[in-house]
Amino acid sequence: MKTLKIPEATIIRLSVYSRYLYMADKRGIVTISSGDIADGVGVSPAQVRKDLAYFGEFGTRGVGYNVKDLHRHILKILGLSSIWHVALVGLGNLGLALSSYKGFRERGFCICSIFDTDPAKVGTTVNEVVVEHIDRLEVVVNARGAQIGIIAVPAGFAQQVADRLIKAGVKAILNFAPVVLNVPPEIELRNVDLAVHLEVLTFNLALQK
Amino acid sequence: MKTLKIPEATIIRLSVYSRYLYMADKRGIVTISSGDIADGVGVSPAQVRKDLAYFGEFGTRGVGYNVKDLHRHILKILGLSSIWHVALVGLGNLGLALSSYKGFRERGFCICSIFDTDPAKVGTTVNEVVVEHIDRLEVVVNARGAQIGIIAVPAGFAQQVADRLIKAGVKAILNFAPVVLNVPPEIELRNVDLAVHLEVLTFNLALQK
DNA sequence: TATTCTTTGTGATATAATTAACTATGTAAT
DNA sequence: ATTACATAGTTAATTATATCACAAAGAATA
Image 1 (cartoon, each protein chain N blue to C red):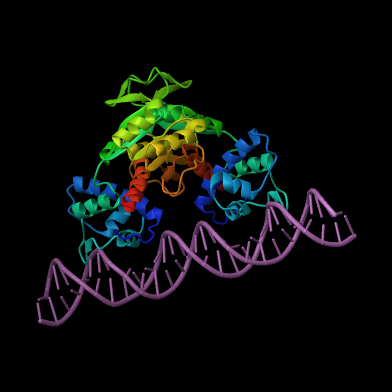
Image 2: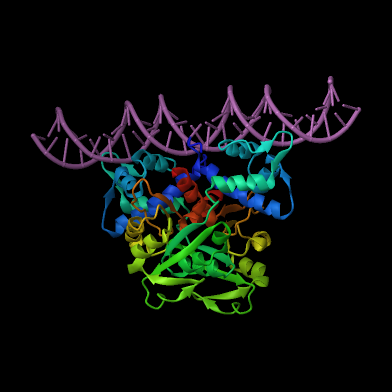
């Protein structure tokens, strides 16, 4: 696969395109143009073509793209042609929401390990997954070969959870705790800070006044 | 306030800086340099200074920034010097998680209206807020003057909820449904797609192989 | 007071990303 | 066959963003 630097914005858009293609396919659409996709997801047609051009030629000039084909290609690009095992740490309200989020399963993510410290939660079953005590994190994650960890614990515990996930062999972390984590460069890390999103909105609202 | 185009990345970073400053303040730190902030949040010192330069001069050369001062200034910039009223639509697992998310309250966001269609939920109290039926959305949102709406309903209902929120006078929307919403240009819209974040991770993991 | 040190603020530069324009290639109609 | 048309792929131009390097300004010291 080509490895010249791909903008992250491109990856995010590919993910959006793929969802749009999935819907188009379900509606029975066979062929689609860059303009159709662009309209559907709110970007320019040139942007769609440019994004795809990083990875190859998937269309036919004068015609467009085959929906199923392109969809399959994008899933492949995004690394979604196989199932990813995800370990979720922290079963608070957010953890619970994430564990039952259908969007993950639909896209090939299996949250197959869940950890918490609360004795009332450990041993219970959430979406067919038995909640483990966090003490067993290394053992379980390692044994199951989870590649991705989701951190949904309070900010104060996030770093130590990250350390333990990495020790257990996780290669990527999605962090929901509002704190900057320190991880080795080879570990993929993304932070989702829900308050930040609201603050971008309020900044723009404040500007308008 | 200056209105020359501010990069969104700058706003996001300001939000992160502000949290770091808040912590620094709590630890009793009085003065802080751009380098300190940079180390703390993982960007370059020049970036920190450039971000701040969009909005004025907040530091003292040779010294640094007063933590409390800078923090206050950033909150002001982000529009966080007053409380924002937020209406949450959809009380599934995600909605429930959002409604009880402490990070929002800490930053001055008050989720003071919650809507759902489920009769079992309507009338119950969640974090001291009585859940209303979605039929009353326009009336309640309008009466309470909520400025921000959070959409946490299934993708298929997101557009109609957005339309109704806008009709009720909401000026900004945070959308968690994995779908592209159509809103007038004057409405601020941000989409949070949880699966997209995981897919950026898997893309990078897939590259490494 | 002069000197040195530190760190901000900023103009210049470099890099990255997006948009626009163009070319190549296929389809369909005459 | 030829022509007109549509649309992908690509190169060039533009715009946006980040980095660098240094002058300006204050603090500390001699």
